Length: 425
View 1 (cartoon, one colour):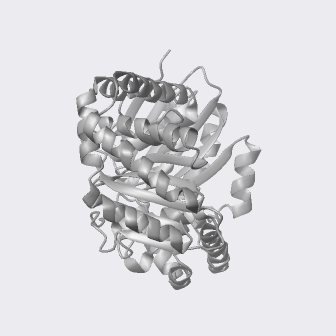
View 2: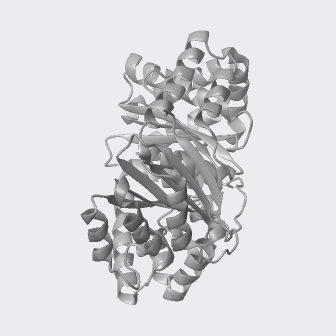
């Protein structure tokens, strides 16, 4: 029996989605705020991520230890994450324990204490996180390519974690102020999936969060263009060069987004993709190569990542050029199109067999589209995409004027990349 999804909007603006899966033993639920790192002012760089950490440090009635102990004693797990345009807190546990589990998460979400000593302690933790990112090329590359695409002064171009300097400037009042603006009814989505009934969930949720102030959405800067589109970090001690290439793409509401998703699968999302089969399997030039789509409300990116020995970089870049040119000029084969459609639809259906994925789907669609979208509706859109639309997407996606790059490696790698970029222009 397919899951049954219902939506309810509380008077204070909170949007609630429930996905009834009576055959499951578990429940997964999330509280989402429509506020992430792109909603920060310059002086708040890293604040969304810092607030996420601080919410786990205690409420007026629960210490940090009591939060984790209570959740785990009920047979559940809890986590949170911050990205550019939202922050989420999620719990998964036995369905019959939903009410006490939700009470803990709602308390955490709504009532931080922000003890001064905990603030200073967590600043030290995040400083370690920042140092760890800098020491891991694949993670550091994410920050570099964002800076290349959006510019160091734009919220989308800054690291989500902030810097040691920005963290040091955070005061308790600043943290409370960001929480007040971001964690309000107008920004909040609650998604629940599992062996639950809508009416029972609504009764529990409304009693627990109906008093949350409505507030208002936080404005943000539109995505702009960086004045310097290429970033390089010299690492002579690295055995590999780590490269990211980024092209501007459509936003998450664009009607052609399904064609671009299929294009990305064919280009580099899985092991059957052209990048993987050509650059890795046939030529043996690297261990890791992939592509990815990044979508925001007002902009999007299609990005290529690879890690390889510096001496292989020139040949790998030529291989990438050939693949992109072929997609623009010749499009895709009927077999590639059919297989990529089957891959997307099949993987999504398999994923949605569990409560966590159903909760994520409901939360993200409600947060981004202000409504629940039937997964089968998305699948129908995927199935309707033609090879002509894929070729049009490739022509739009691989526009050299939007190319940005980030590279971590020896100086010789920068020279190779610079020559390739000049040849592409």
